[in-house]
Structures are given as C-alpha cells and as structure tokens.
Amino acid sequence: MTTVTLPRLFLSLSVTLLFLSSCAATPPSGSGAPDEVSRLAQGILSLNPEIDPEEAGRAARIALSYPSQLKKEYQVTDPPLIHNMKVNSGARPRGLCWHWAQDMQTRLAQEEFETLVLHRAIANSHTRLLIDHSTVIISAKGDDMFNGMVLDPWRLGGTLYWAPTTKDAKYTWVPRQKVFAMKRARRGETGTEPDDPSSEPVPAAF
Image 1 (cartoon, helix red, strand yellow):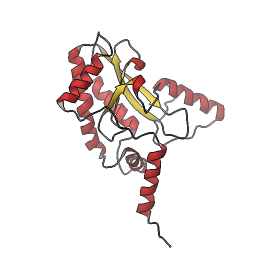
Image 2 (image 1 turned 45 degrees about the horizontal axis):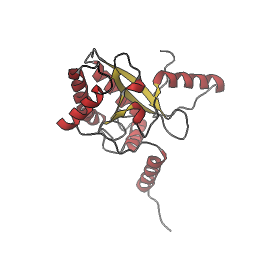
Image 3 (image 1 turned 60 degrees about the vertical axis):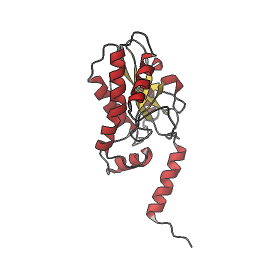
Image 4 (image 1 turned 90 degrees about the vertical axis):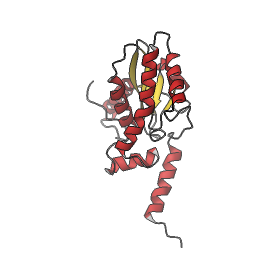
C-alpha cells in the first residue's frame, strides 16, 4: 500500500488548483530591463495621443520595477496560488491578487499623473469555479478601463504581465465597482454570499 504523506498531498492539491484556476499565463511581459520599459511605455503611449511621453515612461518604469519590491515584502517564494494559501493561513503577510493591485495602484497614484488615470478591475466573478482575480489598469485621463493597459504582477508571482485590457487572453475584466454591486445584489437575494478568502472584501458602501 502506498502511503501519501501530507507534503505530497499538499503538493498534489496545489497542482490541481493551478490547473482549475485560470492563473497561469505566458505573457507579453518582462523583467524591467530598459527595452522592456521602452516597450511598455510605447504601449501606454499607443492608448491615446494625448498621453505625455514622460509620464508614460515613468509609469512603465514603476510598473515594471515595483513588483520586485513587493515580492520581497510579501515574501513570495512559490507560485501564486500556493502563496495565496500561505497568506490565507497566516504564513505570509500579503500577496493575494488584490493586494498586488492595491499596492500597485497606491504607488502609481503617488506620481500624480496629469494625462494618465488608474482603474481597478476584477475577473472571474461570474463563476464560483474560479477565484476572483483583481488588477490595476492604466489609461489616458478621460478614457475608461477598456481603453487601458492591464498591469498585473500577481499572475506570474512578481513579474509584471501587461497587455491592453481587451487583448488579455486569460481574463475578461469587469469594473470593480460593478462586481461589488453584483455581489451585494446576490447577498440581498440569498441572504448570504460565500466568502472566498482570496477575493477582495466587498465594502458596505463606496
């Protein structure tokens, strides 16, 4: 008879969850090298001719480099879903997808861009089979998130994935406020809404 040890069972469960979720991706993304910064800056500039090139370059540099700092602060040593388990068990301080989105948004907002604006979005909220996934999106000031660029460092464990919102092959993004409203409505109909510990908490009001 084969004995299944707890570490082996944990590893098997983690691998299964990786397949069941839509969290693995091979992205058009990078490490923060100068050519990658240039590519992302050009991608941001291509969103709207009114974007200031200096601001696009600054946003690109921060978006590509800051995840490395967060990775150290979050103590990330595992793939995203395994790290999620550690956060939810209290073994790691932060590092759920919405933590990455929140901290990226906070850092980029410190730049006080005049031609760029930040949005928050959530994917997978339409189904209970997948965990919610949160991201920050940057666009030209005055444009909505669907004309923006996804900046998602969670899915690769601290390496930025970036792509135009409507060209993200892995996720269909919905404005965060719309998702929150939908969840509040579901709670009103059923009296309860099962809490996914990896999902961003729904505030009572905003």
